[in-house]
Length: 248
Image (cartoon, rainbow, N blue to C red; front, side, top):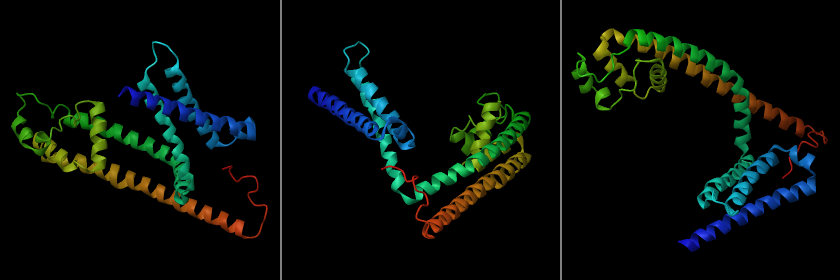
């Protein structure tokens, strides 16, 4: 056990040194200014700095040195494997499409937050206190006998604002929608379903479908953009994108 632990410490220190040497050699060959212009090299530099600092902190003879700390910190080396995703043709397409849709998603998120705030306040006024474990609650037996009570879904309620937000978010996933609706119908009356149908129309049918349409639209635009770039390169201009090819 002790031998295995010592071997792992040496192994971690060795690979940290190899990665540090890789960074140093690239800086010496390319120069720091040219090295720092490449986002991939910035990423490597930060990951390597974290692992080297962790290795030095553990190997130094101090009270705070903890061998388990280096095992956690050196896992950041696995992040370097993310660079391999650049070789996957569809990854850059997905990344660019995500960058296109992100500003639009921020606007949709604001609208969704306002809608959830309004419905959460309305839910507190209509259903506040109707989901509880008070033994004196008149509908306690019906609630416990329902799938809601058997499954322990009591945190999904409108007793306060945070709980209302969580409940509305769960309803957007449509996973436990009917269980939640049945519970509120058992405690508040059959009319309660109208509230949840209104939220389903606004939160799921409208908002989520708008989000999906934005994602599809951004993906299609990026596919067409990359197709146009390829056609421009194939048009015969030998100096197209000269100097923009990333260093390997």
